[in-house]
Length: 212
Image (cartoon, rainbow, N blue to C red):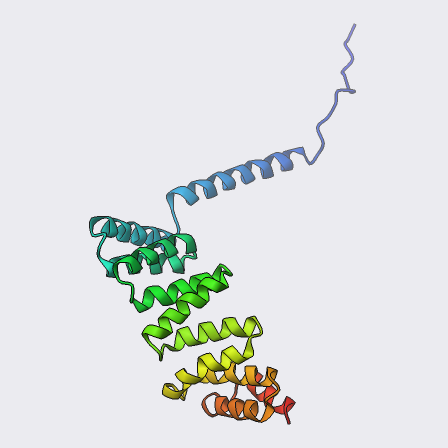
């Protein structure tokens, strides 16, 4: 007697081969990207790692070399490794307490870390060492502006503006502070000074229209 074929045998879904193929492709690509990550590193990242390693070794060989230590600190700062950068700047200050770069950058790092008392300390020290330090004046003034201490902003930037009268950034910061203090005529004068150097500055032009 002939055997009947088992037509009730379960069949695979028609899309099953497609799913398997896509899964294989996904696994292959994932594996390649993983290998690429560890073997074919981003050249920029590799360069930074090499630079840090070289500078770190140089500091180890010459721990009293302020210049090399400052270079390492600055590279770490650029990479936003603020804790390690701060550590190197502090070591530099032990060797050279009056170093402008170390003092200023410690202030800048303190602002990034929202440690405003420390920022004030280092920016103030920088200005004590170099009264015409534009970046320190702007950094300290901007910090005071954020804290709504507008009188302090004016007191900070005014002395530096005397020796840097063409610095539009300081004039702008002073103008905004004077406006906040309600000294409108003085604010308009400062805003107008900004436009002498940056005629197309949108915020300044809007400020003058607002104060008319």
